[in-house]
Length: 210
Length: 251
Image (cartoon, rainbow over all chains, first blue to last red; front, side, top):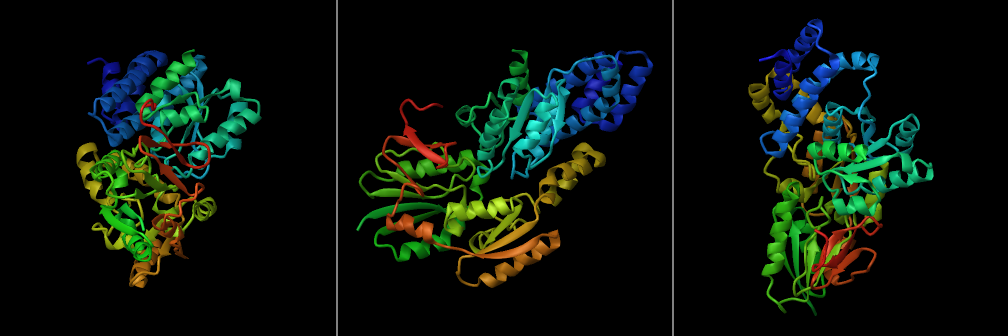
């Protein structure tokens, strides 16, 4: 098995502790950071997404794979920046105001990072103003989640605030969370909806590629 | 005098019995297991089956004594008999008596863990006595499994990641509906709150919404009436839910 393949496999299996020395070894052997990113990490996370959609992987497997990917990315990121490798897009993500449930959101954030996006994770209970601030700093995608029907209306409020700030045309808005549906996303004027973390990556790719 | 069939959750058992006992109508109550909202699809399927099983002309309306409960009641369709459902997120609205009151509580303290007598007395798993939350005590059991499957390092990480939401909670509220020996359950809720370092508060429940429902006082602002051939739909426009014809509805 090639070193890249070993990295890919370790990410898929969620072995964060094995991934890090392998990345260092690959870099020492002169493998380009971009190659490690694409063939090791992004490819691995695609496979993780596929395993989830096939029903082979559940949330714990996805979480530990994403964790391994993040550990690897922490080493690669500065090198990629030095080499001017551009992310697919800049995504600001968070649970909406009042919503404190972040497992799903964090998983989506990590999957997006693993797909090659730059992600600013604002955490939970994020006000419209915080999302807007990040848009002003150059983010081009807003990803919001709500686990409760109680907090769902704050997605609409955030979209309205982005409109009022005159930033709606520069922002691609994605929504998700257990009670959110495609119809609801459409009704509140979001650009995209994803029922799970794997679909979120697909939708973000499609919308940013346009 | 009208005849209603009320489909409801165990969590509201005592309250709906109490409200129905004084109603000017004949109310037949059917209880469903609490906690079914954790799998909205199966709760929805169960309720639709019951709606479909009600014989035509056997009652004037089927009362859905539920909230949206996630998306559990979204998509439920009225066949030959109208459905009536409160415009509510979940049972906490029904306990507190109005959507506005719940919203005010929620806005002031989003991180609230709710307790009630009905829910606690019917909950077999004493580790998770709070309304709706099934995971809080059960996490201990999965730790060992995670260690075996993913190794200790990953197991520790998973416990932290999946228990994260609990850290954002800061308040426990026991809702007293005034039934039976609520004090002993309030004490349990208080102990759990203290153990987790949350503030503990007690709220007096209010049966007004349930009473309105079984009295047939279905005002538009608080209830949705679903005519035969229509189904419940989520709405982003303020009333939480509305309805659409089953034919031609968007899937």
